[in-house]
Length: 313
Length: 259
Image (tube, rainbow over all chains, first blue to last red):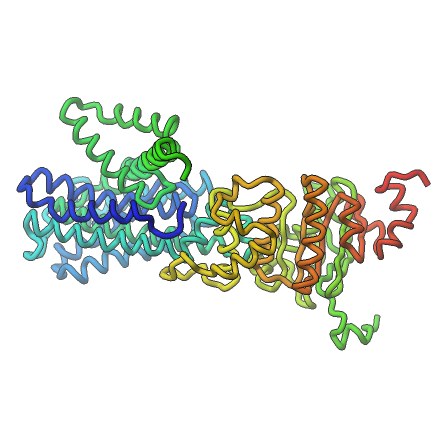
């Protein structure tokens, strides 16, 4: 866990960014759609990792904030005809406030009790989205989201997503490598010790939860506009599980790990679906492999491989 | 009782005082009716056999446990019921008997986090942690002779060095009163010797008041100028090392001598 951004990371980021900018050059609608969705999931997984990797608690209900961001933005845009900017901002703000409220209760607990309470709150959100048919469309989904003209179209929307996601990831990176992020790591490593050097560990975990929720809300808002609809499945626990697996697959002890996990899992799902209908089975196997052989995910594996090839450090 | 003039003029401030402190765990009396005080600048050892209540007593003072009854005063202010992170801010830091560090972070970061917290910057979301408190961290690492290991992973340090790191983390809180729970437990005799020297040195240089528990009598008599003996959660004796050494009751129950 190095301090500053290493040269390798910096170069990888630049190359990735360049490649992402050039994606539309290939003129493949399929490719653009896949990459747009990967970008959204990458942000979603990175946001979850603030809770998992940085504060050391497992949330089973992160989809709630993704869904709230998505629904709020969708409803304000479509039902109330708000312009994009205020609607998007309001979507994120509502998510932040809800995350703050839920975090107040969840951060009283740790470990499995924390995880169960996050799950309970997310199922509550799911139930509301499901039952409040007049507002959310219930299980028919909230379809026909109105997209502003300026980003209406595959390529403009792709660049819109790219800008929002890259800006969010940059902000997250900054926060995770700040005095706050450093202290949060200490809370993860040893909350009792952190308390005895003067850290209010509960307040730290509250902030981590709120930051994670906020960025999940951003991902959700973009997701809804991309699909031109929000569906209750987005708030369901399986969605929380998917993003959790993405985070673990990529590696929770690395900042970019969850983004790599998101891309990997998403592509694996697409490929699997070409051949068989048994994606859940494949997913189960992937989960087994992570838990048994890749506790630190793909990034952990890569670090080990690098260690073998070039010696320690 | 009238206060003595030295209490009033502040020359001999009572750093810490406990009044009638009790702690019961499901009926088991871990600490019973402890009236204790430590004066500024003293190096006070708490000794007693295993299970005498030494660590519980520390946990009650530092807010890790709430007393069943009684009060704790720090510099005359009531601190019973305050959470540990508030008590540290008042200038009362502690180290732990069992190693208590951040194992997956670097040695440098272990100390740096304590400095960030000490300067109340744990909620600075946009202050880059890189290079934050570099000099102060390195000073503390130099003090405990860990500067060379700064970039190493803390959990991979040798046991004795982890104990030193523990001490550096506690010192980063810039305490006036430092509580050390068995600072040399598990160390080799030569490491123990170095530690005694180090602790004496630090206490003098930072004009710390020191309260510590210890099993090793060489350490106790090498550092302490006051000793309190706990037995079954109660104070058996208290006084200068000479007084305690001469106390027959102490010799019987603790030093294991036939009198």
